[in-house]
Length: 190
Image (cartoon, rainbow, N blue to C red):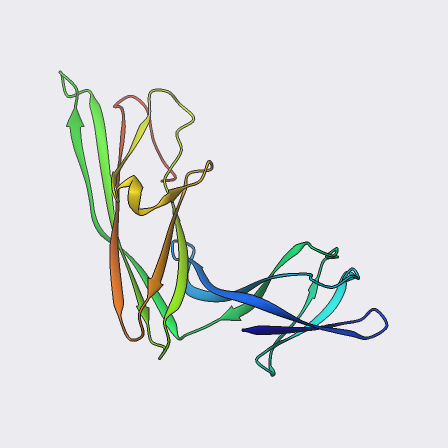
């Protein structure tokens, strides 16, 4: 796939090979966004300013970009694409007493995430969700599902799924975690 960047710096145009990927954070918004990753393979810097983006000779977006030096990588947001759909649904939330005297609590959350490729081509889809991070040693968050081999974990509690989606196919995953805490602590904002 070629990405044509047109910016203002004595009116320059560069045609760069690009890798397209669909990205989403369904916990924030159930939309999938097309992004393009490319590298400045020219000998001149791309100056910060307005940008018109063309994908295979078709205009797709008008935006702005930061300065990109020769050899540097650039990621461009090309907007939401309804050709890939994603849904995140809370399917279960339950609270139970824990501890020897039942003085503790455990709340378990279970979400189902469904991705569907409505396109006629195989596509790369990357999506993120969050695992709460406790700042109190008495509050323990445990990931139950998915297994660590099926995701990447980021330091800020984000979980990342990278899927190759066949045309017309759907795929599901379950995000399930528990939060254990003493009964005398009020936990909110999960």
